[in-house]
Image (cartoon, rainbow, N blue to C red; front, side):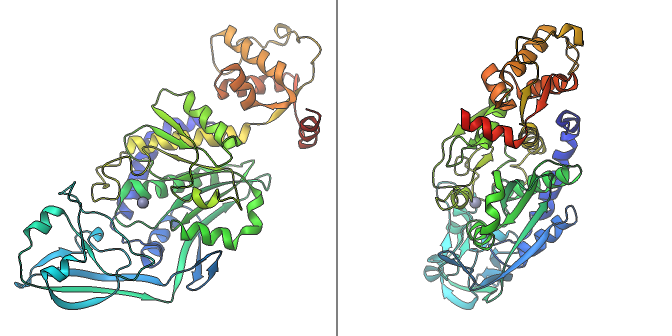
Length: 446
Ligand code: ZN
């Protein structure tokens, strides 16, 4: 896997991810319903996604799969018959999961079902009512102030009935059964960074992984937030022991720096890999400790699973003013940010794939590197001294207990350089890959 060759394509991939976001943007998604199906069908044009349907009423741990919600139209008309709020203009105008209604009412009665953001008076908020039956509309505070007393016609053509919870899954078998899980939520309507950027990046990761052989098996989940991960974990508990690393993908399209939230284990390999990538970069980045709040890492990292899954985003949710408002739109996400985020994810995958342990075959005193032509001979670099240091570190610490990432971190050298040294040393027959057996024996002796 050569991420540097891929990097040349990143700019183009950023534009393609953006186009996918633009295509998905108008669809009204929710935790169930045709909006999710339609979105997953669009992704199926790019990757062989399997779509699962879980019936309403299915018990999933302490939760129950809810009724399926669908909406065709919704508006509020004034007494002149003019639509003053219109779902067709922006689907955020409707409280997500609104029950059907069609009747006339006074402004004061209507106001009890209206949601605005007085602090951001131009923006329309995003609101849901999944687990309490209700109806409502969201609008800008400025628009609300313009509404005059009078009679309003409220119309919501929706249905909330027994149906299914829909999610998408892409499983790609690798050389080994151990797997890497990537998970993104698909339940938000017209919101770009929170939701669609994650869908787009996960789709392009799947495309990339599907184009080559991989050591790990990979599983990508496109699921409604919270209830989706609970449902998947409940129905697939027997598979979870294969998950060795994972990331929750969301918020990867804004112009901010990268933020990594560690897994509950805090020192899992995925935590160390992402920390390594972010510390060896010029882009702005931040590492956060685990907390039991957030996206689906809450479920993956619940104590009964405690999976090694972190969350890799740009600006975290709730930390940008556009979050959960109409301003999280196509102007807010940038092709260049999407490309940059994809590059970080590809680098993480590259390290996971090649983070092996090796044994120095010539471990009694240093081998003579010169006679093997190992100076300045790999990675296209001119700096012989750096090459030598990388090789010396790999030779010295390749005793079966240190992974290449351990060596890179101890040496303070970027993983790619250490990996390059290991490849050269292996080619010169100075290094051999440790079998899993040797790794566990050495771990016990240690
Ligand atoms: Zn959200």
